[in-house]
Structures are given as C-alpha cells and as structure tokens.
Length: 283
Ligand SMILES: NC(=O)c1ccc[n+]([C@@H]2O[C@H](COP(=O)([O-])OP(=O)(O)OC[C@H]3O[C@@H](n4cnc5c(N)ncnc54)[C@H](OP(=O)(O)O)[C@@H]3O)[C@@H](O)[C@H]2O)c1
Image (tube, rainbow, N blue to C red; front, top):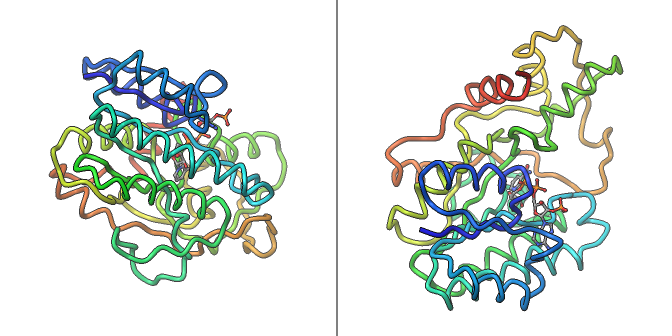
C-alpha cells in the first residue's frame, strides 16, 4: 500500500510517515514548499507520479491566531487545498483521511461532542477547517474519512508540553488558562488510529479521534511538570486575560465512541500518552 502524506514535516505528518513505514507500507512524504496542497498542479503531479492507494492529509495552516489575521490564506490552504486533495484522491481511487479539529465547534456544549453534532466555528481557523471537511464529504466517497482531533502533541513538535517545559526551565513565572477544557492527543496514538481507520473498510464520514480523558490547559500544565519532576508553581488565568486574537472553544471534549467501535479499543488515556511523550522527548 502506498500512503501519500501531506504536511509530512509537521508534528503529526512526520509521525504518520513513521507509522506507515513501521507497518511495512510505503510512505510518500510531501509538504511545503515543494508540494503545497493549494497548488493543484504540483499536487496532481505527485499523485500522477506516485499513484497512492491511501492519503493521510495532515498538511494545514495550524497557527490559529495567524489564521485570524489572514483568513483568506487559511481558507485557501485548509479549505481549497483540501478540496484539491479530495478531488485527486477520488480520481486515483485512493482512500483518504483528512485531519480536522475540535475547533469546528463553538465550545458551548455541556457533554462530549459527537460527530453528528452541528459545527459552529468561532475562529477563522475553525471556519477554514470546516470548509475542508465539507470539501471531503461532498465527494460522497465510501472510504473518505474526516477525523477530528484536538490539542495535538508529539515528539519533535512545537506544542503545549514543549512550551510549558521550556518556560518552566527558563525560570519565568507560569500562568495557564483554566477555562478551556479539551482532549490532549498524542501524534503516535493518532497515527495508529488513522491507519486502523483508513484500512478498516468502515463507512466513510466523520470520526472523532482523541486520547481518552479531558482536562483544562492548567491541569495539563501541572501534569506535564509533575511527570517531568519539575517543581514550579503554575498560576491560573482566564482566556480573556490571556487575550489571544482568535477565540477558542471553552469546551471541546470529543466523544470518540464511533472510532472506538471500529477499532475495538479506544486511544490510550492522555496521561499515559504524556508519560510516553516525556520518555521520548526527555531521553
Ligand atoms: N496542533 C493541534 O493542536 C491540532 C489540533 C486539532 C487538529 N489539528 C490538525 O491536525 C493536522 C496536523 O497538525 P500538526 O499539529 O501536525 O500541525 P503542524 O505541526 O503545523 O503541521 C502542519 C504541516 O502542514 C504544513 N503546511 C502548511 N501549509 C501547507 C500547504 N499549503 N500545503 C501542504 N502543507 C502545508 C506545515 O508547514 P509549515 O510549518 O511550514 O507551515 C506543517 O509542516 C492539521 O490538519 C491540523 O489542522 C491540529
């Protein structure tokens, strides 16, 4: 099997390529600048040359505040670029996983979001990722999967645990928002789940994909430092105090039971994932 991976230099794409190779399959790694997904001709050339049987579409503009400042670019890459990927995957008869986000929800929910719950993005990034979802789903292909994940971290990536560890070691005071609740999710576990799903023969559509458990960013920060044996106090702050340009959903816990039913098991708990991440990152 031949897996074309977009965003293969990113934290999820890179680990996805490793997971593909570990199963004895071929990974075709693509990313900017050679293969921007918003360049149809560049993408079509790779599809034509490599003839992938499967596509893991991880490439995206993921800077949430950057998207707020430049929604046109966000929509071109995350929306139109994803439409290009979906069109070419269909033309080549390839199965497709498109990695989407909990940020398609408005965060006003009071129970974990299910795949069929109505989206209502409150940020330009969320809008652009939802455009991508619609471009994938409107093709109506049997093996096209939209996997929404959240709060992604993994080895080598620019992510929240890395930022907390760096800040704690710098000796600067730490204050972390405690009014956003979500599901920290590790790239290695996400990659395995994506491969299980895309090779499962399960019906296409939307699947939520996150490690088990949920927490606030503040609680996650405390757990990161505790697991890394760094004794630094972590104060709290509100999202309003932090004042980031793009609004974030206050509550974006994902109900992953549909994916669990396909795989016969949930993703591991995020605390277990954090321990494995720190072992790998700190060793
Ligand atoms: N990170 C999270 O917390 C999170 C949460 C939910 C969902 N997701 C989704 O999960 C996927 C993977 O995220 P990640 O954390 O691995 O992000 P990442 O580390 O930022 O990786 C994304 C990769 O896509 C590349 N890219 C940017 N523009 C592109 C274009 N026009 N064509 C092709 N590739 C392009 C990026 O390159 P540059 O670095 O040069 O821009 C980067 O290498 C994304 O679809 C994201 O929306 C992420």
